[in-house]
Length: 353
Ligand SMILES: [Fe+2]
Image (cartoon, protein in one colour):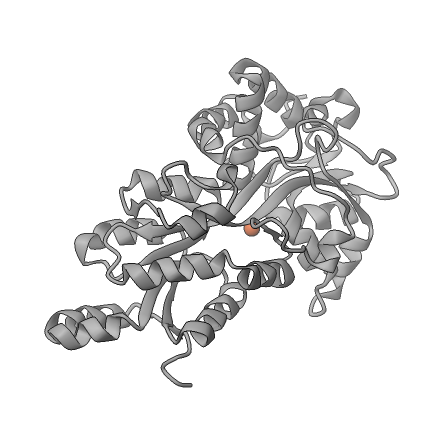
């Protein structure tokens, strides 16, 4: 391994990094030009190939610190001394939390803004979407006849006892519920959510892929899932049973015939105190390049945010995604209400009747 390869930035490395930067003055400034520090909640398998490609192209090393959502609080706590240049994470909920924590600064670099559509980035540039995922409905091929569906229909009595979802308070569901509030208002959304709750086959639990397993086991007929999980199941050589679950499913893009399907993003935040700002912006630009967008598409079966970059063959086989272009910032504004509604209707306790 040369120092041009991305290397993990482990917890123990951080104080050393700080001492190095402070202690060596001018030398540190030179060293800083050749590296960028990324805090990320994304899986190493997915994101490391992107960092490696960036390093190969630019000679700039990427030091990655992998962790969970606590990274937001960590950057906030580190304050002006934070070595973080970028936070790369998923979901508008986490991105918004980071902005609310005051750890971002606007990305104003024109080449980035030109490539990412407006509804997939913050109006002020405080977050920029890097890949998109649709929240779809999966259905048992053998038990569900229809090939189209709307989110609204999920509350219809015909689905009583037939739906599985992960917990309502999960970020992915909160964003979907927030989109329902934005489109229909709070009163409608509450009634809808209570209807969905009563259609659940069991108390919401597990993750998205767990719902596919539930359908395979016959516990329910339809479920809500992010698209990339379907891609990862279909192509999962290590766990062939997941290929089996996927084989029994069909994929429906809700509201594909009207306003479009709800999408969420993975995205990046430029840290407010980024010590290597120039290199960090260069990495953001790289992540929106055709090359990097194609890696997102191939490795994780996500949708590129940049127009004209093809999806993977697996994703292409599902047919056309029509995107609900409701700005994610509007969804962010409705997240708190969505979370309150989940509690109010007792979503996590499952069906009332
Ligand atoms: Fe996920």
